[in-house]
Image (tube, rainbow, N blue to C red; front, top):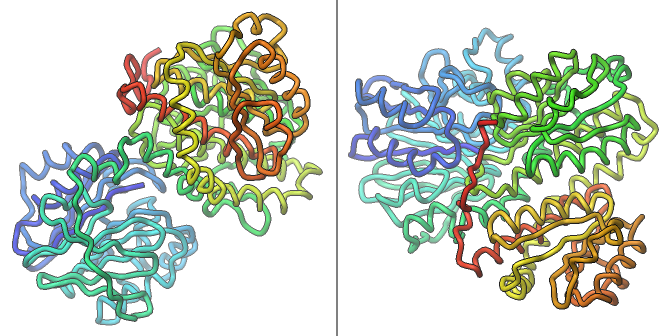
Length: 608
């Protein structure tokens, strides 16, 4: 997820672009850049680092001109660097482009363009767009853009300017957000409304497959086939703070609702012909995979809970023994690691100090390390042997939501890819499993439509100082994550237990009226879970059950029940965690605490 902004009008574009990028920096902050037409040519200034680094360069030498595009980057293809920063230009610098999204077929396009004599200076997917613009230019910017996007597969919001027609700014959207701002003698494009709210409150929201052509006098909307589009102007009435959150009250809620997109983006381009394809990310051969004797998951906090799911998933799919360790403990127990060990480190930021130390320990003993991270170019991604990037985009709230579900998706993909390399018998059933995996975005959306019921239940728990979660199998791992979310933002003391452990001491804590949240999405242990629920009910607990649609039994044993859409048990953890995230959010709101910045906590733990 990156941020783009564009301007055409009578003002100096540099100031407008920098102001807009400042409001979009939450969408990406590893590099930034601008391209501005100076009257005869396109000047580009871009740099690795935060927007302040770019602004520092422009303080020394301002770019002059009234047409320009800008970008703040969240790295996807290619590590954060000056070369990989946007905007990108063609070899003759006649076109400049900024891009938010992923071009899935960029490798084949790049090979085609290299064969024609084009040279590339970056590792990004976006540079192929600039080179295609030059390669397919027919003397008309609009028709050239149409030809270019017809060659692209993936998701994109584009801003394009050209020396050939410096009176135009062209924007295109497919599966990535883009708005057009309408001013007086000036017009704008941006990934989000806050970037242009200082200058105008009148906007068009582009829809998928649409193009906007802007000049100083107005905006023309059309489909990519050239059909004119008529649309009412949207008058924005939000204040700036609300606009930055996309109309949501808090970043955490916004990020919960962004999970369907984060799941889609993490799956994108990685499933082909009923098989998982991670060949661009994992260099492991089939022969090397068959030499692996054990797998270790190493992570902290929420990522550790994802690793717990990973243990079950990879053992089921690969039949290789899997261990799971808290990263801060890993080095100090002197783990048994050798060249036949695969270590999977999971870190949203890729900078978690304990996880990074564990990675180095594993490599010191000859293990192969696969990193699952949300940040291209992070320390973990640079030092691992292989990297699976989760495309969750920047996560602002301290309590992780979309990063966690994206980690689960990466783990499923890793497990299935490993099974293919091992030629495991389970691969024969992947057709059905992959259909289930690809249904997760839509089924997550279904859960989000029922958020009101969860908000109501949250009101019933906010006056309790203690609360318990129960689960078996993978439901236990989800219970741990739900409990962590609740305690870290609502400050309600919450604990999660493996339900089978109740008789070993936990029942002593159950008393009249205490809330117990019981997960029952794993069918193999469903009957045993119901028995455990009866045990806490008999001692006066108020039980909220979580089950799969179609289940008619759990409701007989609990006080209230929530349902997730029917899904294969293997993938139920992705859906089961969403109601628990919402429960934590609404409990925090009811108690009046700061949702996005809980006390004593930071987003990334970069010290041991």
